[in-house]
Image 1 (cartoon, one colour):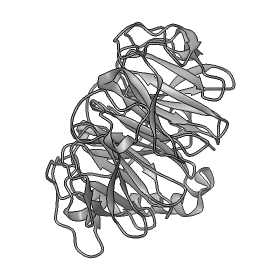
Image 2 (cartoon, one colour):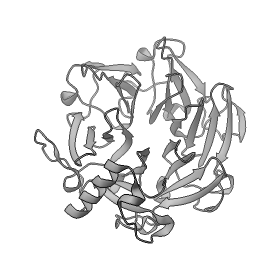
Image 3 (cartoon, one colour):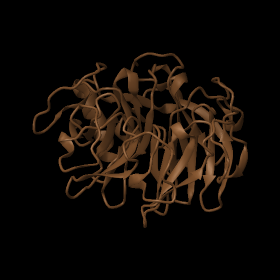
Amino acid sequence: MTSSSRRQFLHKVATSSLLASFPLRSFAQGSEVFTVAGNGIAGYEAEGPSGVVATETMVNNPYGIVPGPDNALYFCEVDSGRIRRIDLRNLRLSTVAGNGEKGYMSESRRPLETAFSAPHEIRWDQQGNLYVVERDAHAVRRIAGQTGLVTTLAGNGEPGDSGDGGQGVVSQLRQPHSIAFDSQGNLLICDIGNSRLRIVSRETGIISTLSGTGKREATPDSGPLTGTPLLGPRSLDTDPDGNAYLVLREGNAVYQLDLRGNRLQRIAGTGEKGYTGDDGAAMNATFNGPKGIAYSRTDNCLYIVDTENHVIRRMSLTTGIIDTVLGSGERGDGPDGDPLLCKLNRPHGVCVHNGLVYVTDSESHRIRAISGLLS
């Protein structure tokens, strides 16, 4: 991103009035895509006290991405194990946790000196604590917002399938990939290696299986959460109304979970592998290994990372219609500009924040932002 483009982007973020603050060109859907972090090279550059310019430095296979309580953007790098922060006021990038090595310690007092093993997603709770789900440490850890103390919430660092009915910290997970908080503050975990969706009680810390049987079997179109198999429960997000939205990687579908009513319902994807269905009913669309999802209250839509198709798709929960909002369907790196001409390289993470949609273009080693979708 040039200095001029960076100033324009920062102006957008500051005003949150996208169309008024920047004269969009006549791209498809009236939107535009920008790189906000990463220069396309995998790696790590030592940071000064004020960080480094996000668009001029290296990032390393970014996955999960979320806004923080300080209005900054946070993402995790699966290859380096680092958790990084983009100050959206000046596009400075800094590291807040992770020493660049793989490892597991159940407790640590220095986040920047702590090893994390393949963090896939991160989440903030309402108290300002940061949670990290680690695929290769088979655990979920919490970084206390006030003290920086790193503790384990779920998983004991060893792969397995045990612990239901007991404290999450002594349970066993197997390659967990995704986490989200429900409307009651309980933590949901995609325990993908065990084909389960697990839940840790906010009040007691007790872990249990919410859905999934432990068997890799096809998920029916509808049924109770309890006792229903889940085929590749890869990623999830929640809304304030007691629903969760679950992406099945091998199942190539999206399900709405009524957490209070103990029901699940397929809402997108036929289960077949492909890239079809845009501008039609999401129920008739096909996906190819989807690996990320974000709920947007602003437009009542789901943003779905269709990873192996190298695109980001949007499903309206109001109309049930699906379309592509980023990616050409070809694997590559950009260019910025028209979102439908911008090639992506196995994206994984997506979030919506202050009128922009942010995407981790994982194997292009960039963070991209789309403007003009929510205006």
